[in-house]
Length: 178
Image (cartoon, rainbow, N blue to C red):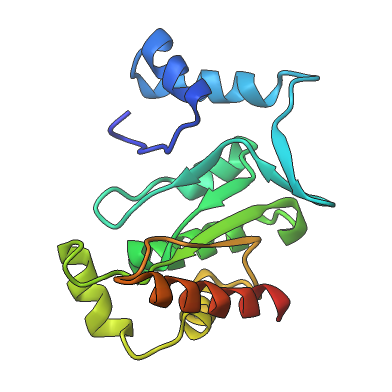
């Protein structure tokens, strides 16, 4: 499991516990999941928009093998501007190199407000992005990913105040409308 840091749904947490931690066992489990037949593999989050139940994510310190994920049939990718430019570019390269049509993939990303006392990541993030709106951060994120838009953009962390959080969320609503 240390070779591929997955962000698991409860199904995968149970699979890891039941099946063990070897890479080959996990690959077999993932392949089995994608061939379940009538079992749902996605959920409709709004009319016509289906989000996969399993999305692969990774952070700067533990990047995932996004290309292998897509080759195995995975369609959901989870990323965040906070994970680092290199991770965003890796995800984008995997999407581009896979040859899979963009509308067959689901890309989630996150833009944080990141109050500076929250973590050391926030200090770095603030030094890079403090003066930019959430809308601009989302545009930078999509550009690093090499896509025109992401399928789901989330607020990664709340801001220091409720007012700042609401203002940032409203800025992200503009992304959805663009």
